Length: 213
Length: 267
Image 1 (cartoon, chains in turn red, cyan):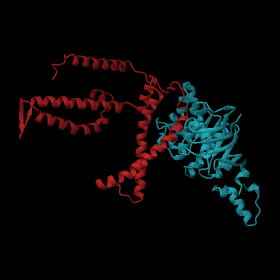
Image 2 (tube, each protein chain N blue to C red):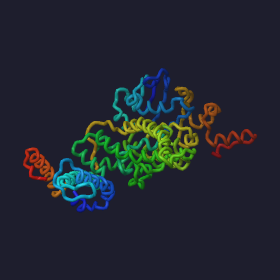
Image 3 (cartoon, rainbow over the protein chains, first blue to last red):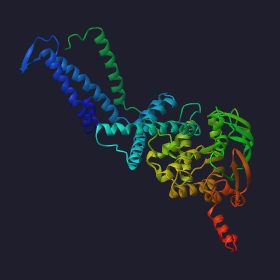
């Protein structure tokens, strides 16, 4: 995954993922290495705690799983444009409603954030304290949530009518604007990695990977 | 050939009263008909009925007959009506799909829904953008437009379906003076370029005076008067209905109140 990220020049975009992952990986390493239940093979002591070989192995496994999961999410998020993904899914037969739900859900997040900022600004202009301590922030939450949710619900009705007025419910497959053909390498990788995943699953279920730590 | 409402009444689902009562109105191709009247008088309902959304999308009970060039909308599908009558609402951003990254794709949204060939989608999209002179916005994020620009994009999105008639429900009510000017110019251009028959509901009577040949006044769900825009906008009853007359009418009244003579050529 990291090799793919480097090849796709996504390395810089990974920084926030590392910042989030570092404390998580550190805690997994420390807890497993020093507190692994039933471990016998002591490596070294730090005060009253003993690092064990079994703990270190379990820690490395768990940490690698977390990093692999986060890195795959990261590569997907950093390398894939939503509109291109939805185009491609539509071309492969995804219905217009499903594709709209995906794109609209992603498109709505920044709009809701902007609306929330406007509501907070309006409340500040009327003297409400929306900053400061936890209590002050919690007090500001309810007057924010009310108009935000009600506003969104009101919007839904008009948005539904606007979509209907633009023939959203017409039958058939929507016109695809862009095609995103796979290169030979992409196709080979896509199939190869899928087959590899299936093969590993079969090997793991069949017990042929028991030699792995 | 017209968008015609004959003896139309409408009641919203779950409501005990009629929102429209016995409405007769016709919009001919190329004609701009204005509607004004007090708040909650039934103007927006009139738009929904004329645009087919009531009852096709929102339900409710329709009486009488709504027809487009002779074909009744009752029993039709909304996507069929949408290709004959385009409808534009008050709130600019709530009309955009929020699902595409550029204005160009927003305008192409309707033609794509119709599963048209790609070259026709492209031609219609550029045609609608150019008809409103907003082709320079094509790469912009629809969520980051001013109110006036967003309303123009919403209008272009409707024009891309190439409807023969347009129904506009207070298209400038949420806009500042600059946005209102932009939309007013675009509406005049759209009327000239597309030749569509237009029904426009507005409180801004200056805009109605500029755009409309005919005007209907709606109150309590009924059309209480209709006639030429010049006559209707000069009626003293307008003030009683909470509709402020256009500037020229107010000016004429002021001149006449001071005993002066009003020369119609001043308008």
